[in-house]
Length: 365
Image 1 (cartoon, rainbow, N blue to C red):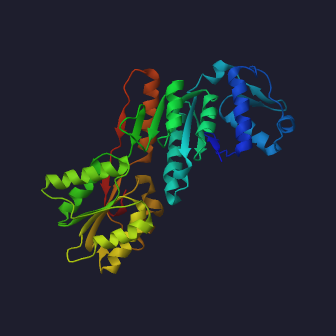
Image 2: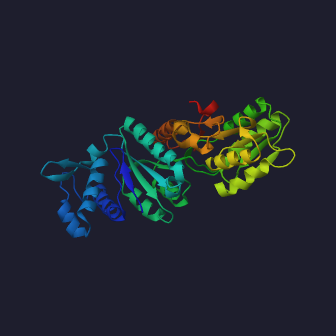
Image 3: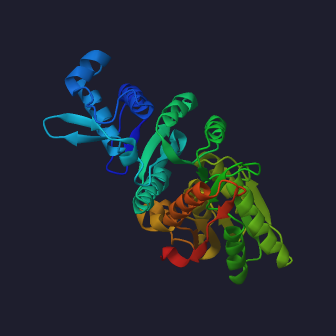
């Protein structure tokens, strides 16, 4: 199901109100519903469109939040003139992949990112239209974007149909938290080589002799993290003593963590940058008679704004290890800055921006 909200407050609608919203928005943008005219009442829309009163009301409120209409007491919703709709920073769309926002506690990252997008957009006088996309809904989403009169688009995944639509429509686009070598639009990614390098250098400084990798390299995040750590080890004349690349799930990480700590020369330092690995690593350490911070060093990964949420609980009572952190707010600000620059200069080549990272000790901010 596709959902919408905007920077003036959360507003989630089902498919019926989504379809009605798209229809009304298209009629306004095309001029079929003229500036100064009033939209049908909730009762009339409900009867003519065959939807519930609540569905019609949500669609009207969404149009108001997008700045296309204004509410007039005892009159209804009046269509605003085009110049009034364009006097501010316009409408930015943020398309969220449903697989991200339903991924357990990690949905907090994307919901916080949305909140930061709304904050940053408000500073530009812009509104944010949120769409949550399920697999197979690319065509539906593209149709909704086409009628929204967008001044910019933010995607949190590499959706080929939406990227193609954006390129064809000329809407400035930025991808956040994902990247590909041939990406034809701007991107802002939490990963560069620096996070892996910080982790490896810290473990070397702690005197670790057998440093292990527990993660995967199947996407840009993993490749950047692994590459940075490997380069730092190579610069010190070292290499990973153990490597476990596996699917990102607790079920896969559990036996992988146990293998790192088995045998006559177990790892004494582990780079584990995925949240699903933290519990299995703690349990494997305890089974081997070890404890994080005592006998086994580790470096993990978490956005700075989430260090005080559920992060510590993932270590099941063990000390929180040093953590590579980055700022969600910085991602939002950079994404919108790239969109603004792209609107000013369409001829610039696509830019891929890596966020700054730092090492937080004992979960400290």
